[in-house]
Image (cartoon, rainbow, N blue to C red; front, side, top):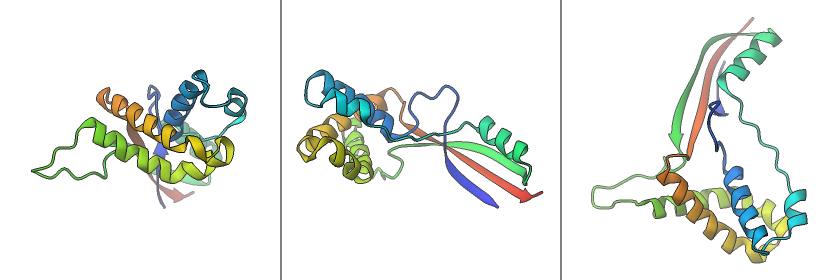
Length: 150
């Protein structure tokens, strides 16, 4: 059996889009654009395990034997293709990332915070993503494993 899923490195600060949304929502709450009580009650539990954690759980459970367990990194903007005549700067990459995250999270966020702030939220998210791209902090750590039934 082969599995691939998103994990994280031990030192990785940001492992999924929800963390960047949280940063932006906190800023908006400080400015009074988002209700602080709504923000504090909002929770989307996402856990990205480390390669060590995955290995320990599989070994402890004993149903499978790990044959291969590796990681590889991929930028959040890896789907973008740079053409020879067209250079994508960090602002354009941030916009792409914001649109990708919006396609997943917007319905959930609208249900809690309302439709009115969505454009502002994702505009700010694009800006934040652009800044984080410059710092090389937006990448996925993918875990790939192959196992055999024990």
